[in-house]
Structure formats: C-alpha cells, structure tokens
Length: 286
Length: 282
Image 1 (cartoon, helix red, strand yellow):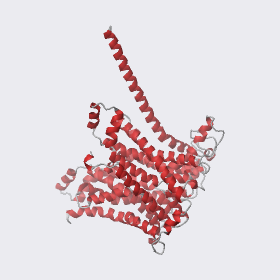
Image 2 (tube, each protein chain N blue to C red):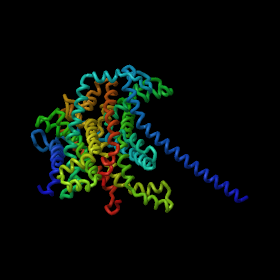
Image 3 (cartoon, each protein chain N blue to C red):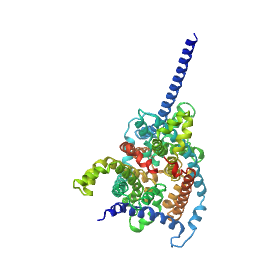
Image 4 (cartoon, rainbow over the protein chains, first blue to last red):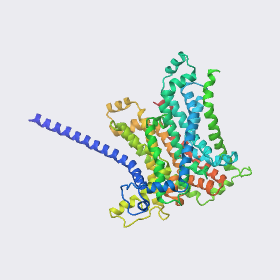
C-alpha cells in the first residue's frame, strides 16, 4: 500500500516538474515571439503607410492593413529632388564600398598573415576609431573641403564615409583571412606561384563571400549615414540628407515612402551579411 | 623586395587614409574650436555655445537619454542573448530578425516611429478603436516634452539594442561549457549561474558593448530631429545647427569637443568599472 502511495507521489512530482517545464517553455517561446513582433511590427506599419494613398496616410483613423496603393511611392519618386538624392546615395555608397574594401583588404591580410613591429599599434588605431564619434569629423572636414574644392561633392562625402567603414573592413577581412589556412597558400608557392598569384588564385576565391559581405556592410554604412551627409552636401544631397533637411516642408507620405526606401537595402543586405555579423562587432574585443 | 617590408606596404594605404581622414580632422576639430578665424587662440567659441540658451537643455537631454536608454537596452540585450544561447531550432532566423535594426539608420527608425506615434498615427488609431480617445490627439508637441522624450526612448531602444545583442551573443559563445557544468554539479541553479558564471565572464563583451552603445547615444541626432524637431535639443543636433544653419564652424567645433570630451570620459569610466585583469581573462 505504502509502495503504491510512493509511486503516486513520485508520479505527481514528475507531473509537477513536467508542468513547470511546460510553463517555462511556454514563457520562453512567447517572450521570443513578443520580441520578434516588437522588431517586425513597426516595420510592417511603415510598409502599410508607404503602400497607402496620400488620403489614407493623412486620414483618420488608420487601417492596419495596406491597400497596396502605389500612389505614395510614385508621388515620392516624382517629388522634387528625390530621384537625384537617391542616385547620390547610391553613388556615395558605391564609392565608400570601393575605397574601404580597396584599402582595407590589404591591411586585413597583413594583420592576418604577418608578424611585424607596430602591428599592435596599428590594431589599436583601428579599434580606437570605433571608440570615437566619427561623424563629428565631418565638421572640420566641411571647412577643409571648401579649401581643397571637395565641398558638396559625393567623393568628399564618401571619403568621410570610408573613414567610418574602413576600420570594419580591416577587422572583417583580417578575421576572414585568418580563417583560411596558410598551408593552402604555401602549397601554391611550392607549386610555383608568387605571393600575388597565390593570393589571387587560392585565397581570393575562398575569401570572396566574406569580402562581398564586408563590401555590403560598407555600402549600408554610407547609405544610412545622416550627420556627415547633411553637413557636407548642399546641392548634391544624399537621400538621408534630403529627408533630414526637408523634414518640415515635406508631407508625411514623402517621409514614409522615403523611410521604406531607406530600410530596403538594410533588410536585404543584412540577410547577405548575417553570417559575418560577429566578426564585425563581437570578436574585435579580443 | 624584402619580405619584411610587405606588411608595411600592405597597411600603408589604410594608415595614410586614417591619418588624412581621422587623425588630421581630429586635430583640426580642436584647432577650429580653440581659435578664431584669424588663427588667434581663444575660448570665444565655447563662450558662444555655453551662453546659448539651447546648450544646457541639449546637454541635459543627451545625458538623460543615454542614462535611460542604455541600461534598458543592456538588460534587454542580456536577456535576448541568453535566449539565443538556449535556442536550437530557429536560432538563426530569430537572430536575423532581432538584428534587422542593425542595418536601419536612426533616420529611418525615427520615420518608423513617427508613423506609429504621429497625430494620425497607428497608436492613436488603436487607442481610438478601443475607445480610449475620441479623435486624433497630438502627443509629439512642445506641450508634451515627456511624450517626445518617451517616443525617442522607444525609437532608440527599438533601433540600437541589436548592436549590444550581437556583441553579447558572441561573448556568451566564448564562455567554455565546463564552467556551467561545474556550477551545476555544485548545485547552482540557473539564476546563480547567470550571476556567478555568465555575467562575470561576459565582462569584456559588456565593456565593449557599453562603450560602443553609450558613444552612439551621445551621437543621437536624426531620431530626435524627426520626433522632437526643435522641441528637444540634443548636442549633435546643436552641432549640426551651428554648422549648417548658422554657418559658424567654430561653435560647431566647440560642440564637437564637448561631445568628444563626454565620450572619452565615459569610455574611461567603463574601462575602470568593468576592468578585467589580464590573468582573469578566458
């Protein structure tokens, strides 16, 4: 009899532990779901706004489903200055990408493959730029650019954006090259390649996805940057500069359509770079 | 060519670039802030900004914003990164979604939250449909500084928690599993393990994350421009106004020096408070 009782209480205990686990699991899943919707729902509402007609955007009360009306986006595209700003944003972002990858890749390779005096100093300098409000540097550069004739040029702006993106490019490419065994390169040397050939034929194909990711990241940095763009461009405004400077004069639907255009590359490109997110931010602290 | 010179040739372009577009403008900020346009050394620029009626409010707003936003984000990011480390199925998808804001500029984030909190926005529409308010109500105006502040806090938390999350997730990944096994054998429950194992060993990552995030908080600009307009001055916005609207490069540079000073002070503070002795690192 007592044996049976014990069994029952044991069963109850297991049942209780099971229930507790279930509660935890439920709590876990629901809070994860909550955080997912906390991120996605605002983006969804922006899309709803951008895909609604102007009347609905300025109307009341708002519906929570899009009407898939292209009027607002069309109006935005035809709005004075938008197309030019969009083009400028793309050009500046491509410049930034080319400069930061072009300069950053060799440096990343040097950090990954060579031991040399001043290596740690160089690494510190790279890290230091990260502990620094870089967009502020647009302020003195605005004055300097006027003197050297780079004021209000996209090239000048992308130089500043490249200063923002270069440290990331160096860190990402260096961790990328570290992940490619040096033995592969040595094999190529033995087979008669010189260093450059070995790099191009062996390392480059392996590093290409990562390099693409870091190029994309440089693109997004420039595409998103507001402060330097607003300070350094007047007639050649990028999209962010345009939106900031016409805030008080542009109607709500222009803002929402602009917002949607702004976040598009971010969402697409982040998908491309998601594998490399960690070498961009996390690993750098050790 | 000597092989020893290879690395120097490889890093030379980056170094020259950073000298030209990081070190030089950095020095130039100070020289512009501390000199007149004729080149005389002066504190006039600081006089100008300190006596401007927007200086103290912008300093207060910037600090207060950082003080409210950063701790909340830190707690959220710790919670989220712990959840990520427990996930098996769907980890990558969840991490991708949670880090989407990483690619969204503060301008776009401001626009997104404007769509929600605007007079005709979704929040009001929702409140209307459940019968709390009778019609469109404007929260984000000068009568309502607290609402503006709250709106900016929400937008900032929404946008910038992802940076902390990524750093902490990789930091947690570096903690050896054995520490947890040992703690469990000695009877530590999940709560104790969090406080005695995870958080202490996460200190280097916490330090990096806090430094980066706090400095970004001092740079807050576009979100405030959109949600607060002129009703909520912040340091970066004032620097922009002096440079762009008032065409006074000296005063703008003085603002830049103030922001730099704050950044350095807080970086040193975090380095000291979260100091990790070399021999205690894993």
